[in-house]
Image (cartoon, rainbow, N blue to C red; front, side, top):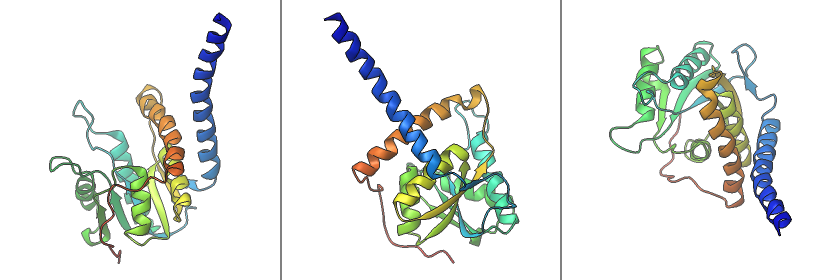
Length: 211
């Protein structure tokens, strides 16, 4: 009896670990050679899609992920590797507006307002990628986020009919990035559940032309 219980416990532990390992491997392999750390070799795309995040940490200090995505977006635009910026993020309440916050900072950094488009319904990476294709009419896009996030976004894009490459914003090392990296492993498992159940974005809406 004890042996059966022990085997059952081992299986319960092994299955989630196997799911994490497999999903991580598939996504990394799918994105291999499609993410870039410098502007030198990255191909030109009409639109750079920057994935939203909060600009402040819970303690009120600047969020490094936000700052680094801003810097990466500006670098791409200045190098003429993108012509327009599409900011996709959460706009859940009138007090929390990721796209608008990004837009204000990008304008401060020298990107013209008319070159910036906002997707207020990018509640999840899946929503952002599907809406970029369906609502904003993009067939090719440069995703701007940290490498781990870009890899997942590229995989989702491929499954939804959108060709994507990623420009990797600076990541965080050590303990500072451990929590986010742990969340990412779970998010990668969820990608496959979304594909299996054909999960749709929360909102669609009218089409928007970027030009």
